[in-house]
Image (cartoon, rainbow, N blue to C red):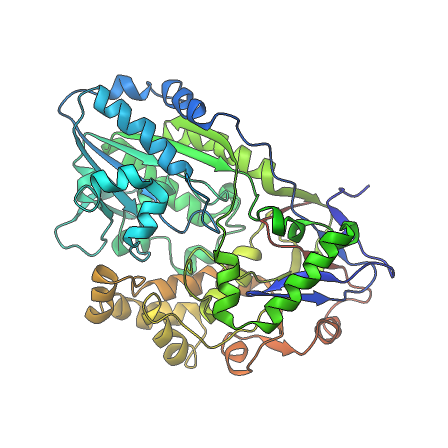
Length: 525
């Protein structure tokens, strides 16, 4: 018996409607195709503030937060950045709620030396208005910018080495955190690869530490980024995090949310197309038609207009690893759907947003990250598609970049990829040179650009999928150049793409559609 969220299409089934960037497209799939739908949103906590107070007063594996405070101590609070969650959360963001409770407790115990750092690692600096959205007006007005600011991984005086692991991994973190009496990390966990030791060890580090695990060798040894036990990346970060916690006094606060990405007018996007009410079917048709007619900025504005009404499903506090076990359990409860058997052909729409393009365009390198990185890796157990199988995606692959956010991406895509797609070669020949480029570094430190090493990391992010998949076919590309540059084939329609994929598949291939968004993961046996 199959799971109720796994639907097998027949000849009477309606077309499926899936994302193609910031458009929606109807696709006809052959009878027998499996469609995997997201789980309904978990029930949200009724009193989030009470849950926060309970968590920090009843922590896992350590003393309550109040017992670790004393007057005159230096406290650094590190906060997850704009890459979490996707899309951004409707105000009040749960990070504001946690910070409000924590800051009150610090004040009650005479702790006045408090600084808050947005844990951006090598992501772009957040703008003031973006930080205000996360922390709320009262905290922003009281602390920004002197005591509430972005991490700077390239500040020559702002980083300090903590040590080296027994695997030779150098741990270097923000000096303020290293020299603080207590580091409190405020996390908002979206998927299982977030949180845990990654919060402090990656969020507050720089290039010297990232290159220990953000490299093609480690990424090729990851067997699902979403399953920490099978991820060489998570294993490396865990080693480094344990070293951090030996030297720093860390108190971890993690929060989980449900997958209610779309507010009431758009909730039908998560439903089985055969189960839509007449009103929902009309709404889906109207939205699909509108998105096909309006220009790209208007399409992006439609999705950006209303932040997501996520519900908070859990708050856990205490020792990092003890906390994270509870966070992971809640994540998998929300996302994991049991699936029997791998597919020969995996179909997936590519949505308009990734962790690295909030408030900007999903450029071709990030389309690659979504396809061969995040969506390919949305499994536990076995990959959803067999070794050598085909992944079919829908996206225009437009040759467009945000010059303020992704300046170094442009050179990477247009100058380096035409030379080679070999991640090992790119790593060896160009990464260090890019990472030290003074113009790009300046744009990262004083503008809102991603670090110059970031496009390399994004290419490596697709490495596990690139090594596993036999072919990637993109449907609906508006050019041939970008798909070819990425090593992909193109098809005009989904029917054409399925026919192409069948040429290298077994007879009667197993075809599976992962129906994003919201987020869904496959537990494959």
